[in-house]
Length: 448
Image (tube, rainbow, N blue to C red; front, side, top):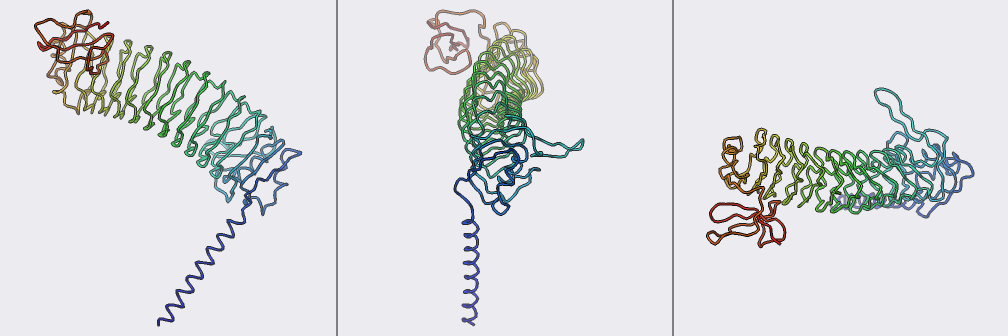
């Protein structure tokens, strides 16, 4: 019996060893040195590589003109065929620095929808739409120097891509270009590009460094959505618009400087940016859209410009780290659940002499009894009798227009001091300070 067991164990061990050896042989069969192929004529790459070698080459350099026929084969070698389905290709390093993309040949990608069949062909000096999409095996790609344009989804779901240099002549990139490139860690966009389009970096969770050119004027919808690895980003001064969901779920983002020229920020633009601690909105912003800062739980300081008149529904939902808030004089509407779950709020300064309208549950799910609402002199009763009175027991008037140049009289003592943005100050700070005194009065004080 023991001999039978030993014999069975021996056979099992032999099978395992043979299996390991076969796997080693398969891996060892890969062609890992760089293969350089010079094409005398576009469309001839399939004639230059035998079918037995096609899926074994890992490092390839192509010199000469390439068209759709060549690109289709490159896709297959890199793990994705012309429909986006996976292949056995092992190509990981592709050097096209001495290649030139030209019009002609077969289509390199196609897909069918409910309306028609879509076929994609090469054009001169253009990385076309879906050119390398789903080529998950690619880790490094060097593009031709003469490229001027990159089409939509050109590198979509190239999850293995870690290195990519974009030529200086590129002036246009399409939507979803790098969508799902989760392995990409750094990238520099060349000068001349004016727009980060829809979903350009959507899901690039590994991206930690990104350099944007001064020519950028617009950040499109979902442009950086899910870029959780980005910790700080400097936006060019010429940007005027940030689209909806532009930075949604960028949970690692802690620092962001918004240019003064921005006049429009779309809904949910910073939804889920839980690492963001402070932000100053430019003076040209007049409204805060739906869910703009929803789930920004780390936000402790936020400066709203004087021109804000409208705060939409769910705008600051669950911003639990926010401790103080200043609402400008022109505010007329605070939407449904706008500050729902802002459990850290202890003070709110409202400069509006006419009581703003508020939606349902605007200030729910935090202890409003521990939060003091500061309102302009002479408006306390108006606020108390409005829907604000349903939430706040502590409503205190402060002088919102005059500026006192002395800190206090000898009859009362200072008990708290804040910046005009509602931040607690430990000592007088140059500029305007809001000071609360022991007699309950609140004054704005100029510190020189």
